[in-house]
Length: 109
Length: 115
Image 1 (cartoon, helix red, strand yellow):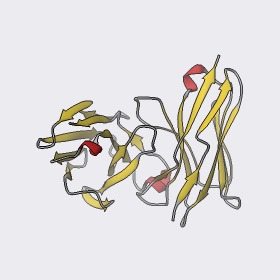
Image 2 (cartoon, chains in turn orange, yellow):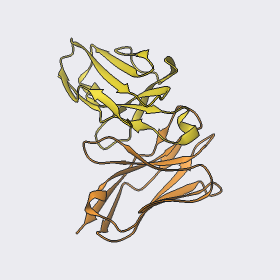
Image 3 (cartoon, helix red, strand yellow):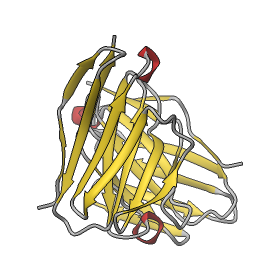
Image 4 (cartoon, helix red, strand yellow):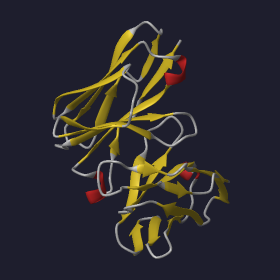
């Protein structure tokens, strides 16, 4: 089977740094993507790790360790607008993207 | 143009109605997808079209019928739906295999309510 596990909720304060972890058990794992979805909105692609290591895009960074079947999304300088759901996803190398259950991030003032 | 456009944004239909959801992208993407998303759940894959041919059907009930008239358009025809089919229906596209670049471009979705 294929599954990706991530915490259901995370709360942090404005200006802080938060890390959302994702562990996966998938056959034929290909790469880890991260998506952001605000309530009522569409999922928006944030980052993709095909190789081990850290990818940085502005305030957001994503990390992958294939040997540990683990990745995380790091959000720095948190802003209120970062309150959203975050999904990790396995691209499986084909057309079928498998999503984790999602982590709801609450940013407090 | 980096948008995936879906219409209608909201749809209410009875169980005997026939309706269609439409999706359009002009990014030259050759793969298009329908996902279903329930509240507080991740998107679930329904169908994938690659080069206008149906590549994946995730055992979706026949009351959902996809159609890809051309490389820019994707439709989802709805007939005899059940109340439990009420959900947000998301269209997405990708440049090729989503695994190659890791990125799906999603539309804003069509929120469907079945009475």
